[in-house]
Image (tube, rainbow, N blue to C red; front, side):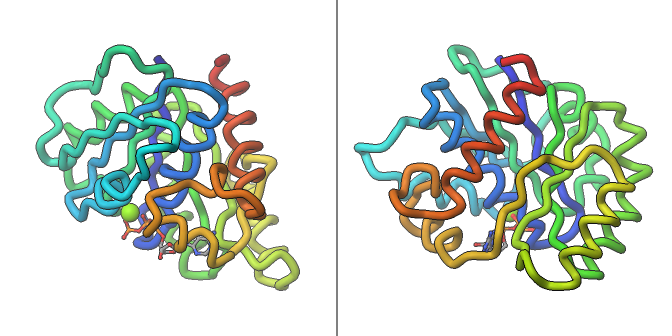
Length: 206
Ligand SMILES: Nc1ncnc2c1ncn2[C@@H]1O[C@H](COP(=O)(O)OP(=O)(O)OP(=O)(O)O)[C@@H](O)[C@H]1O
Ligand SMILES: [Mg+2]
């Protein structure tokens, strides 16, 4: 089993949107996927409870970060995607366990100046964890000057995924439906999340 840990210190990161859409893209690709909601806020758990019966099954567990006392080792899965709360550094032991279990750490980054400043502050923490880490530009407006600026900034921060997720209402809409956009026909981000999964899968040797 491979584990992807989604982290971002900035609230509204967008961590949960990344976690659920990546999980769905992998499930659509035929993997046995599980999700772990380590955020006591429970957004991913709410989303999972809305999933219709007819879509690809995703096995879900909710365990608040403060209650995690061992590496997650669910059986019978090909992929576990872990969603986290913002202030992971307040739970150093639990966070350490999640980083240790991660084959890949995925860090969504919005292109706003506040997000980039926050990201700069998070970098030493991420580097100290020493796990393969990929940055994902998300919620972007492709033609804005700020997006071009952000591309340049994140390129200097680490390895950036060759996929960018645009800001589109189909993403929040799919939350309420319990879906990922990769399973909603006609979405623009669906194929992008599938491309992201293909990239992440190759990186992890899946
Ligand atoms: N690509 C996108 N386009 C438009 N809206 C998006 C996109 N990605 C995420 N959002 C929306 O942005 C908001 C924040 O996203 P999300 O909940 O994934 O962030 P988060 O990092 O999990 O937040 P929190 O820190 O509260 O856990 C949500 O309303 C979500 O639906
Ligand atoms: Mg969240």
